[in-house]
Image (cartoon, rainbow, N blue to C red; front, side, top):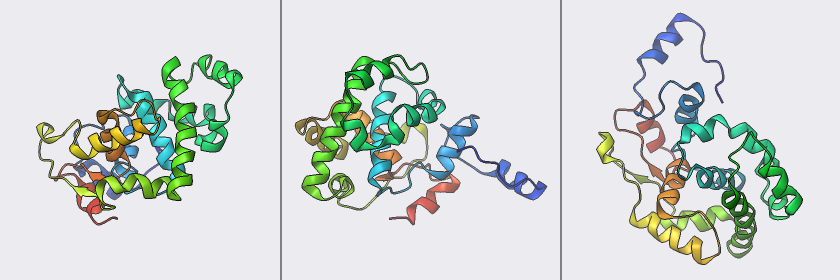
Length: 206
């Protein structure tokens, strides 16, 4: 995240002239996340669990807040190792509640531990969480046509269905709006603006 880009004048000029989605702003971490991760179809269970945790903690907050604390979350939550988190005890819960580097929300921390246990159950049933979660878009990224901020949706029928099923399986902090943010992050939908340099690049990915 936030790695140095090309340092010659040509590369700097190319970087300045790039058209991006309107939301990253000037935060280098947000820009790097937009350019390298957001909307890229994701099939790695560890990364899928990472985004599940981060999107749950984002509830009621800005993504900018979460991205600035991302490394802290990674350290606090055992590198997002789902098996380790599923075995967290009250001692771990207390440790997390005292960690000023993350969002110290009691319900969200409890949810992360609960979701790890549910995540393992889904893996056991489907072979991988990837196989389970991508069924909600029929294993194919949805290509949206975003032209203005008004075109962005907060939730869809797909995120509604995902939320309903996850809740039924015992997951917490998986309302439809949170699920849609997860879908955007994991590339289940391509919500890059059509004039963004990443739109066509991401559209080619599966």
